[in-house]
Amino acid sequence: MCTMISTYHYALSRLALTPMEEAEEKKLLASPYHKVSIEDEWTGRLFLMELGQMADTNSTRHDKFERSFEDFLGLEANSFTTPERKSYQPTPKLINICDDEHREVREHLNGISRESSKWITDYLL
Image (cartoon, helix red, strand yellow):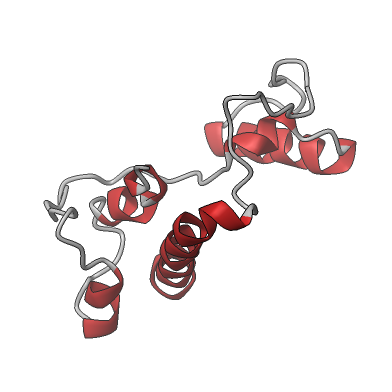
């Protein structure tokens, strides 16, 4: 099972939004698969979101997300709406990551999520 898709902090690190001078930060991004090439001329802004926010069935959170997105893009209030919200329904093709048979993958993904969270919290934000 490929877990590299869950290492989105690697892609974020290439935008040169942090100085990457501290050993701890470099350690969080150390991987034989992570080839660091920095986009040193990128000067854009960053809007971080999780795709599930677009389908959130909680109206308060969903509306807050839409307003934040509008603000980021410089749109008028209430001019952006996401497609119809649907609750996520698992399909038979998916695994239940909580099943014991997937313990090894779950532990690996948890390690990646801890590194991502620490890098984003301590260095990016």
